[in-house]
Length: 193
Image (tube, rainbow, N blue to C red; front, side):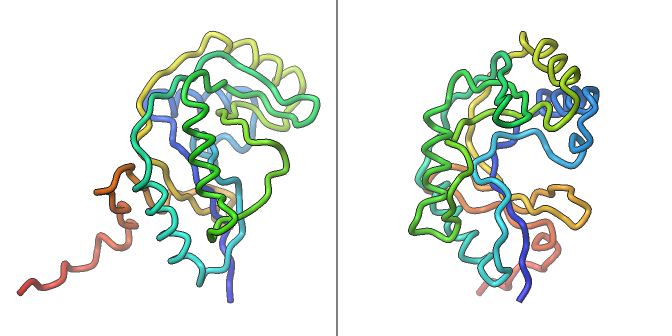
């Protein structure tokens, strides 16, 4: 019986995602290239591989119950001294993110877990690096702003190389079906009658 480390998040769309990832790397954060730019909904969580189908069903059900909502990133903040993190703030859409993560982590579901700190949606741009670099990230991204409509979230798996890889996307709405895994696309379609 094996385990995998999963995370669920909202991807920051282009061109903002790659811009913030490049900036994170420029501040000297070694994790920058292994972590796609995101807003966390479920932090890294170890699950047994046989639980994956239940996790995926749960995520599809959560996504089906949500509708798109606006999100705005604006300015920076920090969790220092509690945690060595500088982030871009979620200025609009915080309630939607909080509702999503609560449903994903519901005690009755397969992703139930306690958080180390109260949930606070954000986009990390520096983590665990020198204080001077953290200060630079905080100052240099203070004027950053981006706005878009969130209409999906995604499941990621952390590889042995510590890189997070997209496994599935879950579009919002009752008609939603999870976007298949890349490997599933290579299977021939079922014959129709």
